[in-house]
Image 1 (cartoon, rainbow, N blue to C red):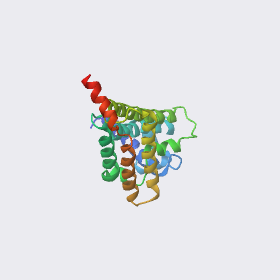
Image 2: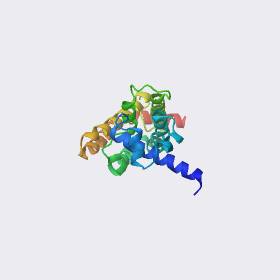
Image 3: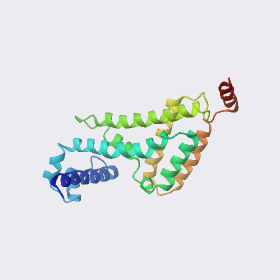
Image 4: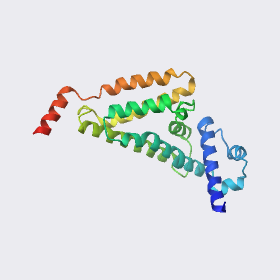
Length: 216
């Protein structure tokens, strides 16, 4: 194994452990000393890769949180098809079947937003977290627009507030899950979420107009 590969592996080990500990216990509760003790590394190894704790958190945001939101929640809503089915299937899979999500650690995105809310830093960490939220929101808006154009969703819905509500409700229920081991919380949420998105469905007259336009 070359030194370059060893350095990359060391960096990844630090990021993964820092992500795990901070997501579980909080940014302020976890020190650099705690992280390097957990992975049996030295301060020298840490500071070879990161200038300080904030620089370290920037790497966690970009290489763990951003990538996970993209793969878990953005890519699935980029599919073509009925948004009602896409969204319902996504939440069923993530909340009721995915063991990583079921753990009582809440949402990493929300956890880090809360923990860094009043944390002065030179890396605009809050701005980077907001950018993840914005990318997610844009992906949902695009999904909703495709649904309107495809005749699946009502042409009267306001896509941006709907996208924001979807994210806020999902992040909220994942945060509440930290308070209980009761799996019914996720089950009840998914069922009510399905009821909500059902209200976005195109009315019969919308479909008639769509068919008329296609024929015309």
